[in-house]
Length: 126
Image 1: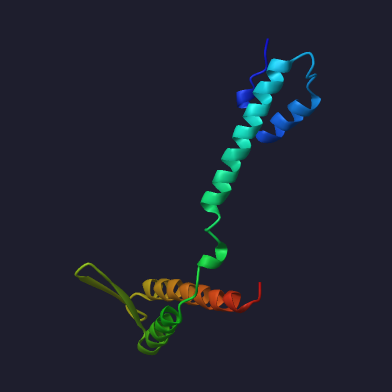
Image 2 (image 1 turned 135 degrees about the vertical axis):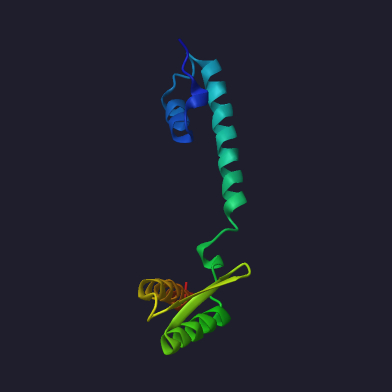
Protein backbone atom coordinates (compact mmCIF):
# COMPACT_ATOMS: atom_id res chain seq x y z
CA UNK A 1 0.00 0.00 0.00
CA UNK A 2 1.49 3.34 -1.05
CA UNK A 3 0.98 6.52 0.97
CA UNK A 4 -1.32 9.20 -0.48
CA UNK A 5 1.21 12.01 -0.56
CA UNK A 6 -1.15 14.28 -2.50
CA UNK A 7 -3.25 14.64 0.68
CA UNK A 8 -0.27 15.78 2.80
CA UNK A 9 0.39 19.41 3.64
CA UNK A 10 3.79 20.96 3.02
CA UNK A 11 5.13 20.27 6.51
CA UNK A 12 4.09 16.61 6.33
CA UNK A 13 5.67 16.27 2.89
CA UNK A 14 8.98 17.67 4.15
CA UNK A 15 8.88 15.39 7.17
CA UNK A 16 8.16 12.35 4.99
CA UNK A 17 10.96 13.30 2.59
CA UNK A 18 13.46 13.67 5.44
CA UNK A 19 12.59 10.30 6.96
CA UNK A 20 12.29 8.38 3.66
CA UNK A 21 14.72 5.59 2.82
CA UNK A 22 15.70 7.03 -0.55
CA UNK A 23 17.68 3.98 -1.68
CA UNK A 24 14.74 1.67 -1.04
CA UNK A 25 12.02 3.98 -2.40
CA UNK A 26 13.50 6.11 -5.23
CA UNK A 27 10.09 6.54 -6.91
CA UNK A 28 8.57 7.91 -3.68
CA UNK A 29 11.52 10.26 -3.35
CA UNK A 30 10.77 11.66 -6.79
CA UNK A 31 7.04 12.00 -6.03
CA UNK A 32 7.76 13.75 -2.73
CA UNK A 33 10.27 16.13 -4.30
CA UNK A 34 7.77 17.14 -7.01
CA UNK A 35 4.94 17.60 -4.50
CA UNK A 36 7.13 19.69 -2.19
CA UNK A 37 8.19 21.88 -5.07
CA UNK A 38 4.56 22.25 -6.24
CA UNK A 39 3.28 23.11 -2.75
CA UNK A 40 6.09 25.62 -2.15
CA UNK A 41 5.26 27.30 -5.44
CA UNK A 42 1.56 27.46 -4.58
CA UNK A 43 2.37 28.85 -1.14
CA UNK A 44 4.53 31.64 -2.56
CA UNK A 45 1.87 32.48 -5.15
CA UNK A 46 -0.76 32.80 -2.42
CA UNK A 47 1.56 35.02 -0.35
CA UNK A 48 2.30 37.22 -3.38
CA UNK A 49 -1.38 37.43 -4.27
CA UNK A 50 -2.31 38.69 -0.81
CA UNK A 51 0.84 40.65 -0.04
CA UNK A 52 -0.74 43.95 -1.10
CA UNK A 53 -3.50 43.62 1.50
CA UNK A 54 -2.43 45.16 4.79
CA UNK A 55 -4.24 46.28 7.90
CA UNK A 56 -2.81 49.73 7.32
CA UNK A 57 -4.94 50.03 4.15
CA UNK A 58 -7.81 51.13 6.37
CA UNK A 59 -7.13 54.86 6.51
CA UNK A 60 -8.98 57.39 8.61
CA UNK A 61 -10.97 60.08 6.87
CA UNK A 62 -11.08 63.44 8.61
CA UNK A 63 -14.17 64.49 6.70
CA UNK A 64 -16.16 61.45 7.83
CA UNK A 65 -15.03 61.95 11.42
CA UNK A 66 -16.03 65.61 11.31
CA UNK A 67 -19.45 64.85 9.80
CA UNK A 68 -20.15 62.13 12.38
CA UNK A 69 -19.17 64.50 15.17
CA UNK A 70 -21.39 67.28 13.83
CA UNK A 71 -24.30 64.87 13.33
CA UNK A 72 -24.00 63.58 16.89
CA UNK A 73 -23.76 67.08 18.34
CA UNK A 74 -26.84 68.21 16.40
CA UNK A 75 -28.74 65.06 17.40
CA UNK A 76 -28.10 65.74 21.06
CA UNK A 77 -28.87 69.44 20.64
CA UNK A 78 -32.17 68.87 18.83
CA UNK A 79 -33.11 65.61 20.54
CA UNK A 80 -33.76 64.09 17.12
CA UNK A 81 -31.85 61.49 15.10
CA UNK A 82 -32.78 60.05 11.74
CA UNK A 83 -31.76 58.65 8.42
CA UNK A 84 -33.08 58.50 4.88
CA UNK A 85 -34.06 55.19 3.32
CA UNK A 86 -34.74 55.68 -0.35
CA UNK A 87 -37.33 58.43 -0.58
CA UNK A 88 -38.55 57.77 2.96
CA UNK A 89 -37.12 59.78 5.83
CA UNK A 90 -37.09 58.17 9.28
CA UNK A 91 -36.74 60.37 12.36
CA UNK A 92 -36.55 59.34 15.99
CA UNK A 93 -37.06 61.97 18.66
CA UNK A 94 -36.06 61.54 22.25
CA UNK A 95 -39.57 62.50 23.38
CA UNK A 96 -41.60 60.23 21.03
CA UNK A 97 -39.29 57.24 20.54
CA UNK A 98 -36.48 57.31 23.11
CA UNK A 99 -35.21 53.78 22.34
CA UNK A 100 -34.92 54.46 18.60
CA UNK A 101 -33.19 57.77 19.30
CA UNK A 102 -30.71 56.23 21.76
CA UNK A 103 -30.05 53.28 19.44
CA UNK A 104 -29.24 55.50 16.45
CA UNK A 105 -27.10 57.83 18.52
CA UNK A 106 -25.16 54.86 19.91
CA UNK A 107 -24.55 53.52 16.40
CA UNK A 108 -23.22 56.89 15.22
CA UNK A 109 -21.18 57.24 18.41
CA UNK A 110 -19.58 53.81 17.78
CA UNK A 111 -18.73 54.87 14.21
CA UNK A 112 -17.21 58.12 15.50
CA UNK A 113 -15.12 56.26 18.09
CA UNK A 114 -13.96 53.82 15.38
CA UNK A 115 -12.90 56.72 13.15
CA UNK A 116 -11.05 58.45 15.98
CA UNK A 117 -9.31 55.18 16.87
CA UNK A 118 -8.18 54.90 13.23
CA UNK A 119 -6.71 58.40 13.44
CA UNK A 120 -4.65 57.49 16.50
CA UNK A 121 -3.51 54.17 15.02
CA UNK A 122 -2.41 55.86 11.81
CA UNK A 123 -0.23 58.29 13.81
CA UNK A 124 1.76 55.51 15.56
CA UNK A 125 5.15 54.79 14.07
CA UNK A 126 5.48 51.31 12.61
